[in-house]
Image 1: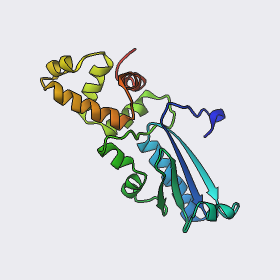
Image 2: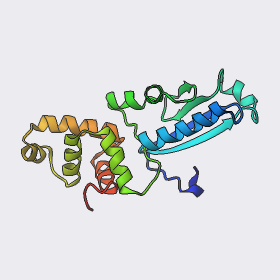
Image 3: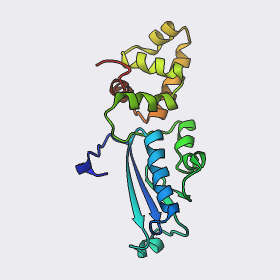
Image 4: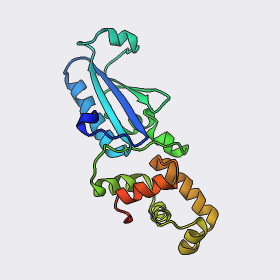
Length: 190
């Protein structure tokens, strides 16, 4: 994907390089698996570059590729590597630090740049609980923590904890970004 292909910069970008050795069954499977993982788990912009080491042999040495297929996540930092055909999704999610980033409260998610609100809602539903989606909607409606707490009959501190987890899960840096995400997903109207 490039700017000409409609690649958007929304602040969080995933840059992935998949090193393969020819058009083997294993290489093709790795490409397909990576595309599916990105579409299913990344809400942020992502860019996949597939590099055939048969065409560019010096890159194997430069990038210290010991086996193929090898996936390198160049952005967000730190760089991460996953070796294999990427068929074990749970290992790829951990290897790319997608799952761990959520649990540690670091932005991570995923968006292939689609404008379809239904796809965005599905992506959000995969990473947020029903309660977190309720809170996201209320945040997007400019409700304070105290107001949300009163509406949902929970404590303001619980609201604040949920808000922090929502922001981390969706890769939002502030309330404005959370509101934008909720509007783009069709969870609230602007």
